[in-house]
Amino acid sequence: MKTRAVRIRHALIVVWTIAMVIFVYLPSLSITLASLTSSRYFIFPINKWGLDWWRKTLDSIQIHQILETSLVIALVVTAISIVLAFFGALAFARYDWKGRSWFQKLILLPIFFPQSVLGLALLLWFNAIGLQLSWQTAVFAHLVWIVPVVTLVISIQVYSFDPAIEEAAYDLGASRLQVLREITIPVLMPGIFSGGLFAFLLSWGNFPLSLFTTGADTTVPEYLYAKMVAGYTPGVPVLGTISTVGAIVILIGGYLVMLALNRRRRAGAG
Amino acid sequence: MAGPDGVILYLKGLTKTFAGHAAVDAIDLEIFEGELFTIVGPSGSGKTTLLRMLAGMEMPTSGDIILRGEKINAIPANRRPTCMVFQSLALFPHKEVGANIEFSLKIRGVDPATRKRRALELMEMLRLPESYYRRAVTQISGGERQRVALARALAFDPEILFFDEPLSALDYKLRKTLEKELKDIHRETKKTFVYITHSLEEAMVMSDRIGVMRSGKLVQIGSPQEIYSTPNSKFVSEFIGDVNVVPVTVTGDRKLTSAEVPGEFRAPPIADGMKDGYLVVRPEFLRFLSEPGDADNHVAGKLYNEYALGSRIQYHVRVGEMTFVLEKLRHEAFQGKLDQDVLIGWDAADSIVVPDR
Image 1 (spheres, rainbow over the protein chains, first blue to last red):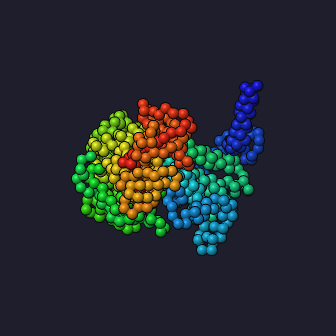
Image 2: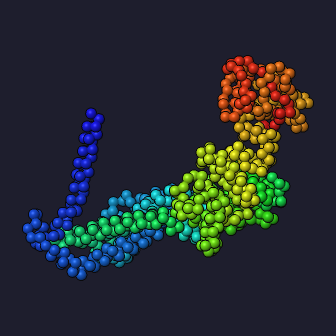
Image 3: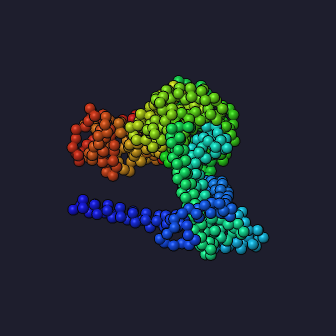
């Protein structure tokens, strides 16, 4: 009886997993299918297969610019948020200081704001102080939301960090700077690395904050939305596929780098 | 131990207050060159704060720390010629055994070949296999990690080595082994060790001298033998473990009575002017008597229970509300039945009378 119940349970788990995979990943896959048509409109089933729209999209200067804008914003956001979140995480999880509990609450708050409201608020604020909207203001807007997330990610690593190891290094004659370079940064590296991945991917895919704050510049998600609202071409799923595949490549690449780092560490590059 | 060469560390009125509360309260202490000095006290007695001040990780509120005649109060930990083995060991998790041991040499700019030679020397001394040089510190056992931490501190070549309860996380058997090993390392290196622990038993095994700490003060300093046989207070006498402590009143020259136990007792010489105090008798000095006259003092009670402690057997004897603890070697075991009436006693010379401090 028991083995039968176990078998049924296993079967249900398998069915559930397959269903999840289908519901989550099939829509993404259908985007790719939609990009492989040669006709002007989105029709299922596809009657004329072809790579015409891929060629057109990859040749388009406008698309190049949009990808570049998204990439630059994501890279700048990643760099700045790693630096801010690294020190933020030390303040969040490592050091005991007056006002720390307030800091811990305030820094997390932006994560829970509806992003469209946050975007609108920042737009009004940029206008009020007379800033010209561009990709730079979008970087600022992304940071408001992403730095807290990255701070949390790095903080998790900081919590598992024995403060005594910094003291031990200091006691063994290291200066504060040597402690940071030899101990703190290397030990927190896995957290810093995954924080950086988070920063890049969250910025790369962000729509609501960009919508309000990029001004004349356009990011990939903004372009996709605009084209869906008016002027759909199969170029939209092409760019969508590029964007998604790019994110997946970075995620898997990051995972592999991480594995390599861990292996090297264990094998002992000391 | 041979006679001390001189004072290496001198503490003068050393005090540390946190929010108005003195964690370390005006401590005066001399630590001698090459000795293994243990500071022992319960948690919250201020021993860790004291050690952190000596290592340079806390600044004293007042008082002086004098190392070889030089005041070092304001010198931070990274410029003090002292080194600490931490309670958590604080091994660098991202570095291998070798890189952990060599850390201080790397910081000083010693070349890699010399560094490695020194690390391997220390590993050999501490009986760590040479193959461990490239091993991750997360992949070795607790006892081995202990040795790596010690090797790392010794590589620094400190004037004084501090230990912050490094054995407290280990199981009993390993702790017992490492206590002796540490004392052997002390013998080999001839360095000054200052060790803190909450276990007086651990302190007894290792130390040349022991300082007992309570509420920020050192209440007694002495050799393990002195602390064991002539504690100067109820606190110190009870700290070491099972002991018989009877509240007493001094009634005359070397004469005592107790509200808890009937009879008048003969006592060793008592400090002048003491009225009330505690009579302290170690369990091994209490005997089962066949005649009341077999010892200076005797009391009648009932055998309550007996416990096998390996080489010894412990007996609890109830006298009124009090329980007396006796210990006998296994081959001298007392043959008695539970609840049997027994007569127990001790000689005045085997007891001491201490004040309530």
